[in-house]
Image (cartoon, rainbow, N blue to C red; front, side, top):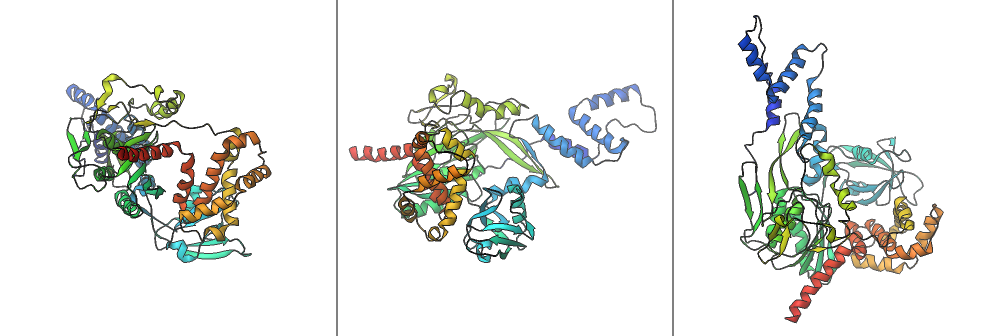
Length: 549
C-alpha cells in the first residue's frame, strides 16, 4: 500500500504571508513625479487581492504613525482569512500546536495519573503502572492538596490549569502533597516527569463467548499497532467475531485507517480514493496481507464518528464486509494538508476530498465562510428527529450507489449504517436527570471506591469485578439514600423506570476506579447500550445461519 502525501500545492494564503515577509512595496515611486501610466499601472497592481493585502501590511510597517508589532496583526489576520474557506481549513497558533497534535502522537510528558475534579479537589482515579507517579508512591484514591507548595484543593481551579501544572518537560520534578485515607498527615512525594503513552484503544475485552469488543477513540500514530496487539490478545481468549466501536471517534491519521481497513479486506479491494481541484485521483487498495478477513464483524458508528472513522466504515460497507450499526456519521470528507511556519504555527488547508469505494462523497454540504450553519447541523438533525427514526433521513435518488453484492447505499454526507439504532431515552426520568446533572451519581461512585479501596485494588479480572459488584445487593438503595442526603428526594416510580440505567452507570463508574479502568466501565455499561446489544444479536445470528446450512 502507498501512503498518501499531498505536496506541491500552491497555497494562496502562503503567498500572502511570503509577500509580506519579503517586504514587497507595490507602487512606491520615490524621488520623482509619477506619470499617468505609472499611476495606472500601480492602481492595476494594487487591484489584485494579494497585492492589496501585502501593500497594506507594508504601509503599516513603514509609514504608520505608531510603532507596533506586525506579528500581532498577522496572528489576528490569519484566522479571519481561514474563516472564508471551508469549515475544516484552520490556522493553528504556535501556542496551540502541542495541544492539537498531542492526542495523535501517542505520548506526552507528565506524571502518569488519571484524575478527576468531581468536587473542588483533584482525586487520583488511577495510576499508570510503572509510570512516574507509580514509582513515586502515588496511589489511586489520593487527593492532591498541593502542587509545588501551591494549594490547589478547595480553590475551584479549572481542570486545564491542573493539567498544566502537572505536565512538563520529562526529567523535571513536581512535588505533591497528598491526602490519603487512614493517614492523618499529608503524604509528600516528588514525581519525576517522563513520557506517558497515550492509548487510542479505550477498551478491549471479551464481551461474550467468542465475541470481542474493541473501542477505538481516535486514529493516532499508534492505533494500528495497538489494534493488532489487542486482536492477538482477544484471539488468544477464543475470539472469532468482533464488535468494533468507532462511536465518538472524530478521526486522525488517514494511514492508520487504511492499514486497519486492509486487515479486514481481501486483496484488490478499493479502500478509499481522493480527488483534488484538478481531478487528480489517488487510490488505496487492500494488498491481500490482511489477517482479519475471516472474522465476523460489526462496526458501530454515530453522529460523532468522523473523517478516518467514516473512511474505514465506508470502505467496509462498500465492500460488503461486516455490518455497520448505529446512526448516520458526521460527514467530514475533506483532506487537510498541514503547512508549518517557522514560528511553530501552521495552516491546515483543505486540498482534496475523500470518496468511498462506490464513489460516494463523505463530506456533507457546506457554504464557504458560513461555519455557524455547518456547526448547527447536529442540532438540526436532532430537531428533524434523525437521532430517533431512520425514516426522518431522506436521500436523493441521484446519490444512490450499489455495492458489489447489490446493497444500496447513499452519498450526500456521512455514512448511513446498515442497521439503524435510535438514541434511547426511554429510561431517562426527571430523577435520573437530577442525580446525573448535579454530579451526585458520579460523586457517589468516587466515595464508594474510597470505602472499598482495599477490595477494589485486589481485583485483576473482569470476572472478579463482576462478582464483587453482584455481591453488593444494596448498591441502588445506598445510592438513593446518598442522593437524598444531597438534595434529591427519592421518587419511587421514577427510580423504578430508571433502575437499569442508574445501576449500570453506578457499576460502570465504580469499575473505572479499578485497575481495569475502561474495560470495567464498558463491561458494565453495554447492558444498557442498544447498539452493542443489537451487534451481539447480529453476530450471534450469523452463527445460527451457518448452523442452518
